[in-house]
Length: 113
Length: 364
Image 1 (cartoon, rainbow over the protein chains, first blue to last red):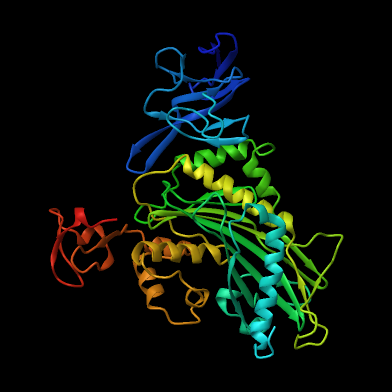
Image 2 (tube, rainbow over the protein chains, first blue to last red):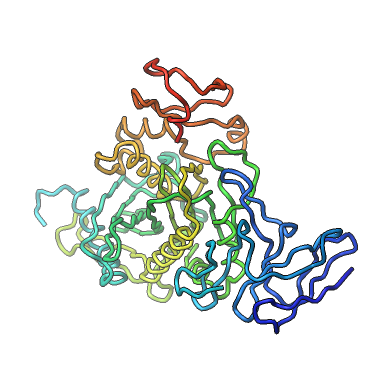
């Protein structure tokens, strides 16, 4: 088991702990609302897997992604926002509704994640 | 009310007035005009004589009844051009008593989503897309609804889903109507439908005496009305579901097979979506046509072009070889081809008019 501390690249304040197993699989991200990222892999076909990366809804209100979790990859690192081809369904707590769109902007209240 | 009206016409008029009353109380200010109604009223049915399309609600304890009255109501909201379809399922346990037991509400959205899904209780299942393997992969709509479920204590969608009833309690009749939320892309549209039982408020077992006087049974007829909150919750859930679906709309055609549910509305909406695509100039389908009480060429050709039901698992297995829907550009004939029937150059001969065409221009 390994623990790596990650700081939100948006607010640079909140920190989370990425916990992986001996085999290098992701066990948990402590303190965070985290989700495996999704990618389009063909016509009307998607893959959703933490190996693609993990999206985190930070308490600061912005979203960031974590890559390199699996063993042998470059070190675990956090990035602002999401890479272009990756997607994530987000939950807007102001509107109490979920959505998914490329700009990560709540379609109801316009909040930018 | 004129004496020349038949008993059936009087009953139907009374039912519509009762439903109108509930609708106006619940949604009055949001509506652009009066709802329209279509009612099919059959004689009370015993278990043995249930007509399949009407008998989707099994009753337990003491007595069994099939729904023998179906009312389709079209609501027109001020902020939308498309109607909201409401299907009421009713039964008549004895003469002079009508129990409105189930409400389904639905819309047809003018876009498609990547895949269909159904939520029952707290369980979410993906529907199979036509022409794709039944392997359960995820998609953006599924991800959005799962996100709602993860926040079920606060999510507006989950809270209005929770508000829907599943029990109907009446004297010695006891039954359950499964609540559901279905989202399914069909014929370049997406049907969204919600179902709830229409239980009247617990403490007031109040019935409506209607009409006074000119009723075949001297005492008039009692209608057990659905409660306002149920209709309001169902409409709210429908709005939330349509909104979530719109965030993941896609610009290519997808055909989702329909799930087996205790209800008629998904089937009606699926057929109506087919009618809109294939016969856009025609009038809407009637309940009689949809239930098969009246032979309909339109329904036959829609059903031929697109399967109606999800079917059982054995039916799914038998359909393993994915099929591709084509429309001949010459005769507009629509049929399905297995991939093995399509030559590599994509040039095929129409099965109906024998003229050649290119598959690339004809799939949808």
